[in-house]
Length: 104
Image 1 (cartoon, rainbow, N blue to C red):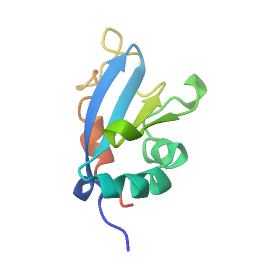
Image 2 (tube, rainbow, N blue to C red):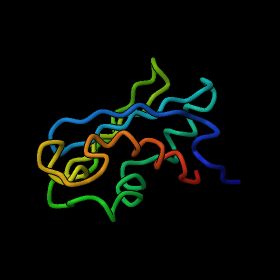
Image 3 (cartoon, rainbow, N blue to C red):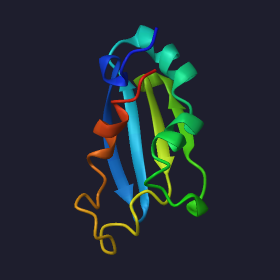
C-alpha cells in the first residue's frame, strides 16, 4: 500500500549555486527503513526530471541514520541559482514540499 511521503516525513532544503539539497527526515524511527527502501536517488531524479538540467550530473543520496534522514543533492535543479535564475523560488525552498507529495 502506498501513501504520500508527507505522512512519514518532513523536509528541509538548502541551495548552493545551481544545486538544491533536500533532506527528508522521518517522523518516527520505525519509518526510516521504509524511506531507505522506497525513496531512491532514481525516484527523486524522476520526480524532478521536468525541472532538472540532467547534464549537471546525477542526483546523489546520502543516508544519515542517526537523524533518521536521507539527504538528496540535486545538481542543475535551480536553473542557474539565485543570482541567475528567473524562477520565482530561486532558492528552491518549495521543492521539499513538492517532494512530500510523492507516493511511496
